Amino acid sequence: MAFLAVFALALSLATGRLAERWASELAQTSTVRISAPLEEIEAQTLAAQEVLRTTPGVARSRIMSEEEQMLLLEPWFGPDLPLKDLPIPRLIEVVEEESGYDAAGLRLRLAGEAPGAFLDDHTRWRRPLVDAAKRLRGLGWIAIALIGLSTAAMITLAARAALAANAQVIRVTRLVGARDVYIARAFVRRFTIRALLGAAVGTIAGCIAVALLPSAADEGAFLTGLGFQGWHWLWPLTIPPLAALVAFWATRSAALRTLNEVT
Image 1 (cartoon, one colour):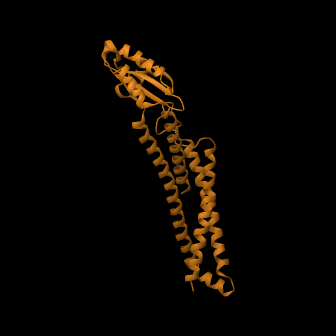
Image 2 (cartoon, helix red, strand yellow; image 1 turned 90 degrees about the horizontal axis):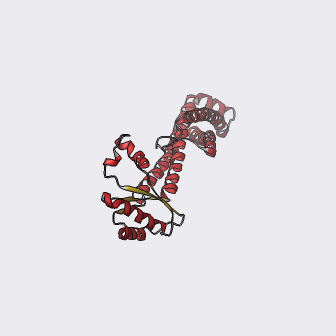
Image 3 (cartoon, one colour; image 1 turned 90 degrees about the vertical axis):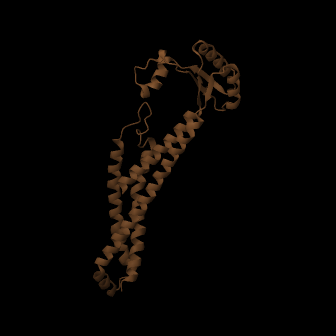
């Protein structure tokens, strides 16, 4: 269970970083797409550039080269795409200031100065991606909670089984004056120590497995970098103490309840 908890924790923290990165990076960038006849595209590109240069809140804008556009289309169409023979729109990368700009006003200015220009501020697809990453993070924490509940249930069953198997010893111990709290303490100590040691072994194995996962790729692949970074490596250290705490309360509750039932 500790091994699984490490992976659930790594997933939750990694998706949290992913959501923050998408929210921060994509929020500061926009794209102007210019679709116009071949004889007009250059003039409309220059007009759009002038509009962007004089727009408050726009830090800088840059016309993307054919090589950059080729790299954007390569994952879908392959490396041998004849870009010059296709009516590919001209793209302008826009980087905005922290205060942002008036998107509605910019669209109106572009419509007047460069009718073939379309502003895409990434809002349509940025928000679903961020929401999906946040939901994955929430699912990770839910998985950790379910792992904790499953651990408590298994320890409770194991404690009740151990008490039932030692019913005769418990009766004899009571006859010599032992109280139920003293008897329960012996079971609690044993199960708590075993849970602590087992969780420590599982946590170490989980951390080794997470460390062997692929690192974050340069192209930002979604399924890479699903591990711990920086001080987040301290989080797995909390798993063994929490497992011992769960074992302590589960065993104590099960032991006292079972001892009350044993006569």
